Image 1 (cartoon, rainbow, N blue to C red):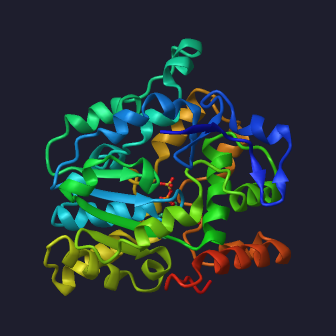
Image 2: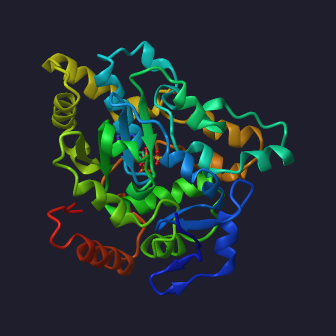
Image 3: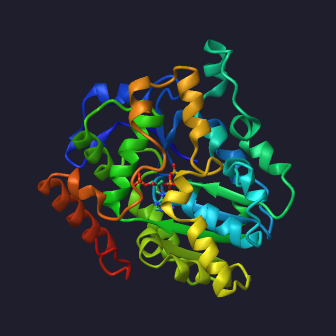
Length: 334
Ligand SMILES: Nc1ncnc2c1ncn2[C@@H]1O[C@H](COP(=O)(O)OS(=O)(=O)O)[C@@H](OP(=O)(O)O)[C@H]1O
């Protein structure tokens, strides 16, 4: 695999050094392009372990670029596959539906050497080992772009559910996430530049989406849009249930729609990542003011970019989107 050092840049060239410092903090020392995808430097140590990860044919993956509705889709998939067992769904989503990438994202050893008081659970410290020992059927979250995913996905054909969201709302959500959980202190405009310049972790954005879009008609792939979930969640629930080979009565669809509503998920401690925010709060890992201002379940809407992006930035995102989606048949209409 090729690893090149990442220089943070927007479409118009490199950005200031201070931005680089924002993203290189207690958790991450720097970034590399691994087979083209932007990953924390630390990922290099695990790239082969991820490629060689044992995939089972009865695994279900939820794949996505960050902030596109991953958690929402995970909860939907898990509840459908587990016949709406809301009692069992009280176990935190991170444990029921582990994040394959976790181990590779932060240098925990280094962090623990300076902060031995910080306690991380095993699904965070060793997500690969945690999943290796997980009983089937497994549910696995990942943000890895297609070229970094485990090799056995091709031969063992697990269920692959991809969720995509329009670039402008994804960027706004990623910006708030980066302030709340990753220590970003730069401006919103600079963050937009980084997004457009494919410099953020898990970028490039469009190839991430399109690799899955192009596979959407393969029998073990399902492509879902965040905007469709907002518009008609019951219909997305039915399509996903068919894909997972589950039958849901209209009554069950209505119950699940309610369980997955934004307000219900915002108030559901097993899916709203309050425990992760709490680790940051408890150990002072992130500025307290940011934590007080933010929450993981933030707005949950389509078009949130309107109050935040300048007209000029909106038109740059629209041009970028048009250029990348031309001839693909994929559109977002936002
Ligand atoms: N039930 C429901 N309804 C509508 N929207 C929802 C829901 N659950 C999560 N969300 C919104 O999804 C955004 C978080 O995305 P991810 O789960 O992909 O984040 S992560 O990458 O896993 O950190 C984040 O979007 P923003 O509010 O725009 O920041 C969440 O609010």
